[in-house]
Length: 233
Image (cartoon, rainbow, N blue to C red; front, top):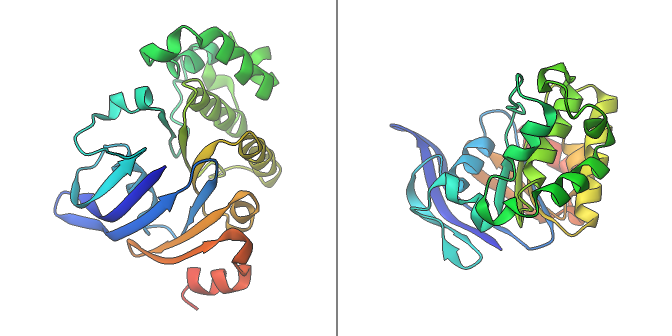
């Protein structure tokens, strides 16, 4: 579904990704793990067109994404749930969600999609009229996930959903990800919590220093070996 071939990208004169290649299969959860500064978020930004490629190619459903504006990607079925939630605190919870249905092709079904999101996150329905700024960190993460689902994406990019959350809330978030996986959704998950990430993953990539240093099926990954590589032990 998504092919990333020998991609190089970065910020100005600073290159971060060095010939990164990976494949995302339809209906699977592809997890990208790695320490801070490994290039995980940079890779997601490159997929979304927020960073220009210096080299390589990103292909989605058989078509290159080069030159496709970021704001057109939701129309093509790609949605990103960014690190840090990035909700609009002064807008209501429902207004935040409806922003996720902005693509023209999704607007007609927005109300039905909203009810599906509320079924997944009942608390958001209870508080739909309240400002998003009243939510806790875990609740705000649920709002960000719900907003991403509002465009009925074929591919979801989810960046560090457990960041800054209490362990009990992390468990809730990953239960939701497991439900999305069970629905057959295609997800690229960037996560530092390797134990939780491996539980929902089908395919695992380890990134270090802007390069992919491990590619394996999740069922074949030994956690201790992964941690040895992760921490360069």
